[in-house]
Amino acid sequence: MDNCDWCNLSEEDKQFKVYESKSWSVFLSDEQDYIGRCILVLKRHCNSLSELTDGEWDELRNLVCKVEICLKTVLGATLCNWSCLMNNFYKELEPNPHLHIHVRPRYEKPVMFNGNTYTDSEYGHHYALHKSGEISAKDKEEVFILLKEWLNR
Ligand SMILES: [Zn+2]
Image 1 (spheres, protein in one colour):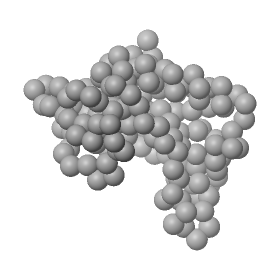
Image 2 (image 1 turned 180 degrees about the vertical axis):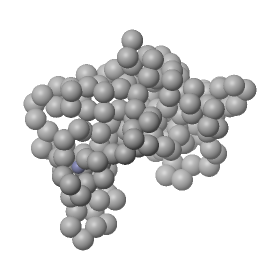
Image 3 (image 1 turned 120 degrees about the vertical axis):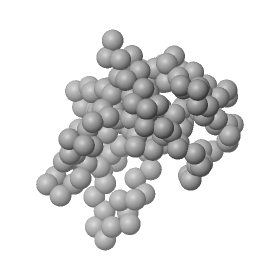
């Protein structure tokens, strides 16, 4: 799709890619409101989960397992919130969504990085849409390296 931003990711968009399979790419999200938040993007243009091929579903299943174990092992996540929303695409006059899935790790206990403490104050509840508090660039880089190393071992 020539006019789809998700089919034409820039090098800058791709700089936080932590893992890649045949059909999917996994990126550390720009937003780190929940430490380790990632996004799974299907490499081909596809509008919805219901249009995935059997092979893409198989890969997605393996990826969900792999990413969950990674977030629990590396960052100490208690559980993961998975969501496939696509709502922003439908603000357009002619929606043409590109399938992607968000994963937000949720934490019973605070996560510590370089002396910084990140707390999941909504733990046990729906994730916050506008969460306060920013991750430092240094901590984001460290999370990126840790996840990338674990996923590509
Ligand atoms: Zn696309």
